[in-house]
Length: 65
Image 1 (cartoon, one colour):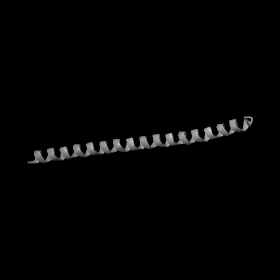
Image 2 (tube, helix red, strand yellow):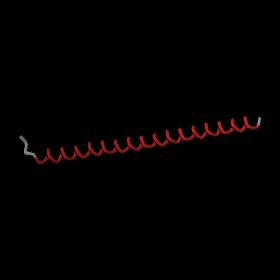
Image 3 (cartoon, one colour):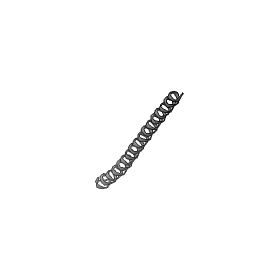
Image 4 (tube, helix red, strand yellow):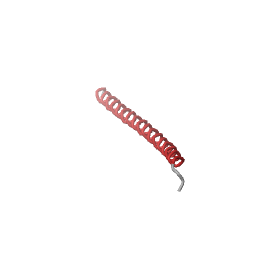
């Protein structure tokens, strides 16, 4: 009877440990994806602003037709 109870406890501990590992992995993946999205958005905005500045600079230096 005691052996069965110990086996049940070990099984449950293993299940909990497995669930914790899955949760930690998912959390880490979510953080990585969020960082990538933030970096991508920053690059997009920087590209738009930089492109706009280049366009204005070129437009102002061209002779009018």
